[in-house]
Image (cartoon, rainbow over all chains, first blue to last red; front, side, top):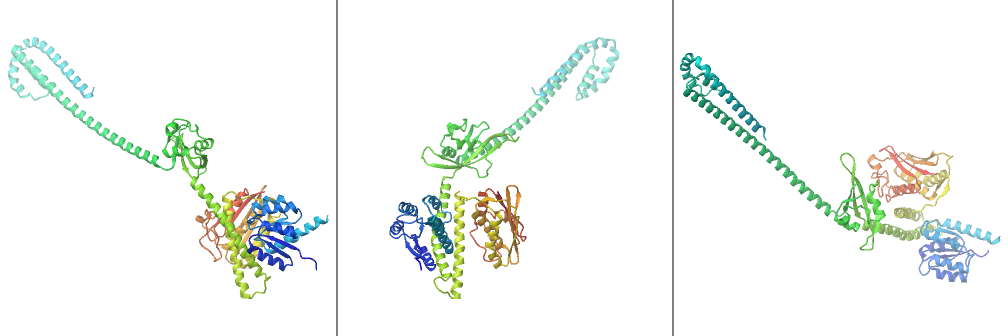
Length: 129
Length: 473
């Protein structure tokens, strides 16, 4: 059995990340959670995950700043922005920093799973080319 | 000169002429009298007594009588002359007295009438003056600014409130063109008739306090009885505070809705996890109650979404993500999504869609929201065994018409005009699941209009309802 796909959830709202982490684990993913951007940067520098879910509104360091800082040392890692609001205008403003998608927190977890699979597939294809 | 005085003179003149003629005649008669002396003498004696008895006879009769008694005796002649003069004097005096009395009476009457007229005029003048004072006081004391502009654009009057609102003084403005010293937008509002019923909003920084103030100006053209424009009256209200409150309210609703969403999602996801049995097996009862919790949570989410959408629409912050899309597919997807709910109520959803419609440039998510709302409403108000028909066709080139018809309870004429109002909810329900914020249809209307389309409803009580909207391609 190969190495599990690792997912990093970056969100101060642990009431949301807990069920999501549980769900992803049940689907065979290796899941880690941090609650702010600074911790996320430290985590990614030490053990880069396969994919990152990044919340926009967070204390200490918010999503857009975190994204910019991650891109300074890692241009490759797939990052999916998560938001509690459909059509979050802040999500649109940060697409230029290279994001793989936007995931609405209210969506079904299965949609999140589909998104992860699609992003990783695209990412793999790009790497292989 | 009054006509009675003229008559008096004419009478006096006529009498004088008569006297002259009589005197002339008298002389001639004296000559003739001598010839008839004996006969006259005899007749005189016969008639003398009778003539004395006839003093009260008419002037003509008197004169005739006196003349008939004439003899060539000097004494008699003098007597006769004297008698005639006396009679005439008496008659003239009597006439003059009568006329004077008549004139005096007439004059008194006229005077009385004039006095009455004058009193009426004075009363009317006084009441007009009181009314004017009252009107002036009302105009002065109304909180709204009032500006009256003549047809030449010159200010006719303005009240203290208007002076304060516009930051100008009446003395400076009255008689001068309204556009002097006033900024462009104020000028436009105050000199052009506005067709909008609510009036126009004008925003300007006032000189004194440097704060931005928003005025609402409602103007009406003043016409005279011939329909000619004689000026324009503008009512100015300071709505700065109102606008500020509206802005705060919209901001509050938006932030509260946002804040509510986060905990709702956490509850929803936890429930979803348990109900998917990822966390372990559930008893039938556990599953039943968790399903109720989940269903009501979704309902709460929809209400919050509605509030958030409304606050966005009100603030003009709703943006559309327009992409070419096939209307037939959007409708089919929406019907598919709503079908389970309809079936659970034994209501059938039928489709009547023209397959050859061109693609429309719309925000598919928002059009889906419009359809879900309309179909959802139709399901709510249609009793079991009813049918909902969703139709779509090209109305005319460049326009697609979509309608949702139901066989439900219908809407009475008085409620028809209100269905698109915010927070309006139809009173009578066919089941307990009809509830919401009352924002659904007003959001639908706003979304259709944001797409450049329009929406309307036709219905009769008990005859079902048909909601139709048109979207430009």
